[in-house]
Image (cartoon, rainbow over all chains, first blue to last red; front, side, top):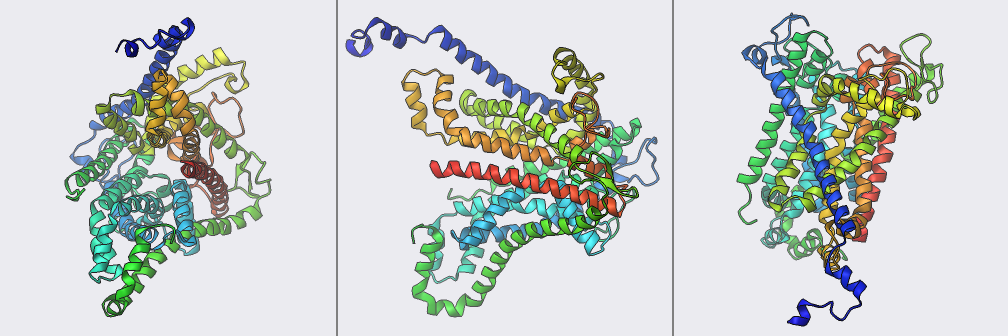
Amino acid sequence: MTTLTKPTDDLPPAARGSLGSVSAARKLKDRLVQILVYIAFALAVVPLVSVLWTVLTNGLGRLDATFLQFSMNGVGGRDEGGGAYHAILGTLEQVAITSVIAVPIAVLTAVYLVEYGGNGRLARAVSFFVDVMTGIPSIVAGLFVLALWLLTFGFTYSGFAGSLALTILMIPTVVRATEEMLKLVPNDLREASYALGVPRWRTVCFVVLPTALTGIITGVMLAVARVMGETAPLLLTIFFTKAINANPFEGPQAALPTFIWEQAGDPNQASIDRAWTGALVLILLIMLFNLGARLVARFFRPVSR
Amino acid sequence: MTTDTGVKSAAAVQSPVRGAAMSTGRAGDKIFVSAARGSGILVLAIMAAIAVFLIWRAIPALQKNEANFLTSEQWDPNGTPARFGIAQLAFGTVVSSLLALLMATPVAIGIALFISYYAPRSVAGPLGYLVDLLAAVPSIVYGLWGLLVLAPHMEGVSSFLNSALGWIPLFGGDNPGKNSIFTASVVLAIMILPIISSISREVFLQVPRAHVEAALALGATRWEMIRLAVLPYGRSGMIGASMLGLGRAMGETIAVAMVLTFVPGINWHILEDGGTTFAANIANSFAEATETGRGALIASGLVLFVITLIVNMAARAVVARRKEFV
């Protein structure tokens, strides 16, 4: 035991010193880095707290029934009152349409990548471009819909055009989330199904997808929360309106992000207040979806995992 | 049959009962496969269509352009004759996003190290979620915050930097302001923090446990362990992560558009008001654009698309190369 506790006895004095304790300089450097790393984390928390705090304190003032029930129709920049009903309605409609278009395409693409594509050339190309698609600037998605839908096909500004732009931003995130979930489905399940003589498409639809469903729903909700806050593509596709337009297929529609953009562009304090409240409502909506995604992930987790 | 994926083995299982399968789902199989493959092809088609339609819609405006599209600092596509060039936009985009990258990368890597090696295990998860919350805040809110909260604070910072480091041309200039490229890049830095730190964190998690323990067993302090085992292993991952952040910063629109005040021309003094980027210029001048103006904006968007495409592809390639060497 003594040899184990004092292994440095046979070594020359210099080596004994370096094994015995950490030198002051090394200790100092270690401490310094530790402090720097803590500071780095604090640097990230400061803006987060500041953003949330200012949005909360500035936004609460106008978060009243009027704000949620009325539009900006006939309300000038200097006037008190006015609301974002038209914008909230627009955002919800656009996001709903976006999900209806994007989710089937994205889930089917993920099914192709995981279940059918294997390592083929097409699957690799699709996988690569899905990655590239996540990096498309949102404004470019807006410009594309502008160039295709509005300028080439001659449609007018509408909520639907905005949904098309958001679809391009939503597809890659849902594909990636679904892909991860499908990869987690155990192969035993697929093989058991095949062994019972179930055709492949029924196996995918009734065995694989249901098993991965909660994960897919979580991914979709997170993606919805992400596209909900996109402003840039909407500026080019839904344009602006102060009135309620419940029809997403015709005429300019409002959305919460564009509402904030419009109000913040006005120098009057009443408008700035409305912008803050709009930001608060938008953040609350996004948090709601984020929270919903987490709850779905937690409570509807498959039992076997 | 080298890769043992579920798909291949499933096909092998299915072959003996092919006769039975014919009656139960042949047609369904065909329809389903083509739907799945069609969706995949649709994704490729969308990417191709983006390029094609942007080019197609940009050409008429480019033909009417009387200035050099690449080198002119002017942006007047609505006038007759239309004169516009992207020099100023490219300058603002590149400078603001590079600055943002310079500020964000060290901090983001620090955060990733903090969460994976310094924070107590029990709180590491929630703290990571906290950083990810930064990504959940929409860019319009960052814009509003940057314009009304951050910018007034930046006035003091700018004039301090100007008086202390004014001899560097970048920080020079006579009247440092708050709606400058510098302020915009601070906002951008905050916005790209989460993506860089979350990807770096993922890479750090993959560092083999044995490397870490070997370093510690040799008597390394925690920092020495990170320097010897973690950073070399994660290098390409961190490079890839910061390039993805760069791509994000270049394409960011609304926050930049709200923070900057437009002053025409390239100004190397980044502390002074002014400057604009591809994306911010599109958002700001779209509402008043004529037909040629829209074409010009689409042309500038095309340039942005190509630049971000190159940056993203390079980033993905760097990150993917890491995977092969694991």
